[in-house]
Image (cartoon, rainbow, N blue to C red; front, side, top):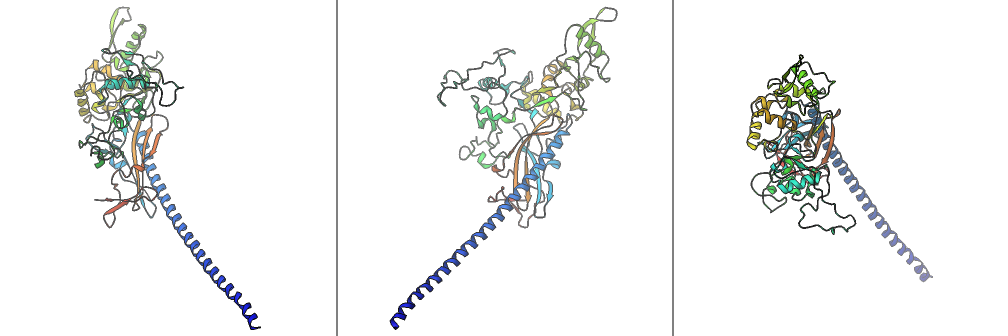
Length: 498
């Protein structure tokens, strides 16, 4: 009987141990789930905070884009206040959300012709040679752009090629495009044909496309400024030790992009914003400000079945015609050096209303001005030196280079059709940042304000390249430093504040 009872109690002891073990496992699993939920909650909170900071930095940068659009759209012919204006573009406060104060800075890298490394302003696309519509500009005068490269460039964008030793041009010699039936990389290329790899034969939308043109490369186009901050950083002045490749000469090479553009055009509007009068339109009524003699001159030109190629051609012009009695006389235009600015501002000779690729006389560097026909580097440097002392009102038309005695009438008439005194397409970068969090976003932007509504043409987020420079604004910290991080919680860099 006792033996039977003992046999009956042993299974109860085993079941109790099993239950205890199950309870311990359950408690362990419950603890792991709890810890996992706590970690996940903390991670989500961190992610939400990082995302919110990223959006706020983006919003601050976009505020800078809007301000740049406003300033560019309001710029008057002859003005350059938008070019470097720290009071408008540097460390501008946007808002205070209680945790951070947010700012933006608009900036543009200088060029080889500039005396400053970085400007708080915009770059005028009309200060560069338009590769799609170069007008009278000579590509071969651009540094490091050789004769074969200039020829290849013209073929690539479908431009006429100048005949050797003449001022005339021939139709582009377009090579046959690669055989589309050939396997990739196996299209035969004749070693003696330097243009065999050219295809495009039409306008390009970005300078980056020129990397496909023989002789060009990405580094030749964009230079040593790999992080696009306009500053010569240590890795950009160490030869081939670190990226990018550079010549270790202590100067920042901005590449050919400082001389070239794909987007620049001017519209036929006077300085007051009104449409210009076409001198070749018989039905047009000349503005009262112009001399009455111009009306008689234009009538004589039309009677001779002639046209005016450009308003500058009326300068000191005469034509053989008949007076009221039928006697042949010289009929003067009445346009002199003194009133030249009026006819240039109020009149046009083109019915299209749009002029591609004109160079801004008030912003182009000497290197770009020297690409114009008949203008050498010495004259270009004289123009650049003189314009800083000319009032904005006088710089409103290109007449000032003749009125100031920098160029004589024949040369003025030759280059005036390729010039303008205002920009309508601009390029710049914007840094949006917060203090004390140090979160930031960097945008590269191009805009066009020539139309009825200003518009953004391109907008690229280049935050991945890093903080371009030490921000200012209200950035006081007790330790004298501010930490700035890319969106997403990247490891911050420490930037001292003065």
